[in-house]
Length: 157
Image (cartoon, rainbow, N blue to C red; front, side):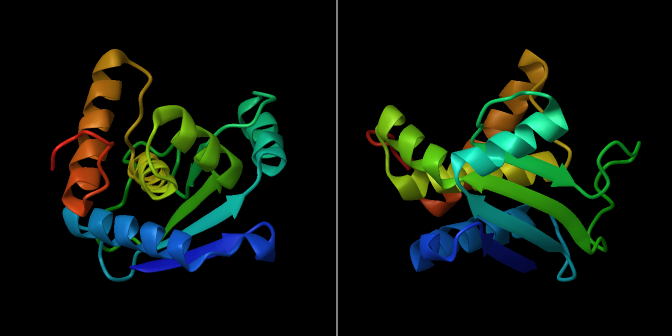
């Protein structure tokens, strides 16, 4: 899997962020059968940047933590399977990563891992519009996070 990580501002670049994102994406590729040709682009930005995207694409004028733009979004069949090449884009607010890590009492790495798998699952066609869908998506998120050891404080592996 080709994982392209970009930054809104170069001074935000951290090797630790890239390691977390790559681990999560590679685990998702393994678990969900993404082929070696699969590509994903991830942009790490600040609240103002993601707020504009959220406003322009979702008509919600506030910062959010993660946005996903699947290449085949809206197509009846969704994800094209292991031979698919470019999957789409994920945008993650580093400001929200830090805020939510503090709010939920866990590490920045754990929050970044969570937002990465959340975005990947959206790319793969998961959603959380209904309680049933939300429960299924949460189960998948926690499955990947547990496999990688990104657990909340006090949680057992």
